[in-house]
Amino acid sequence: MRLVLDSDVLVHALRMPKREDLYALHKKASNIFESCIEKKNELFLPSMVPIEVGTVLSKILPHELASEGIEKLLTTAKEVYPFTDNTTLNSVYSISSNIYFGKALENSLKLTRIEKDENDNWVPGWKDKREVMVGGMDVFVLTYAELKEAVLITNDWALWYVGWKRGIRSYWLQGLRNEHVLMIVNSEEVVYPER
Image (cartoon, rainbow, N blue to C red; front, side, top):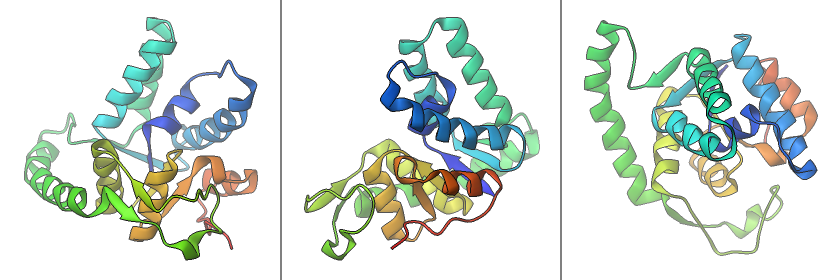
């Protein structure tokens, strides 16, 4: 299965939490990331995700450990778009980056602020707010998952909700049960959210 893991998921996967309340998220995220290392799933990343992960890891880990985490991330990813060491793909990517940019720009105008549907109050993590807002990096990640026809896994509830409402297969890490994670690890599709 093609996966796009958001930076928050990768940070949870690549560091051992100091707070006990974050251990469950670490375990879920690291199991999913391990499935990509083991090639059970394919990891696809837009280039800003490793940059964001590196930025966060460098603030919370010693330099050597942060560098090791980024190297593991880059060697695991099947693609870090639009960068590759394949010259032919670089030519294709230079053309396709216009498509990606155009779609991201379109999504930035449509998706950065959406009204919540009150009929969705049964979904995990629901809060009584009228709208959901996502940022620019979120739009890039969401657009990339959409164009790659990949499953987006994020711990950002707003990003998950916007993706889900948009029809993009996406999972909210905190809302996944252990059996969901096991299914993802085994490259099985999860019905999420469950009613």
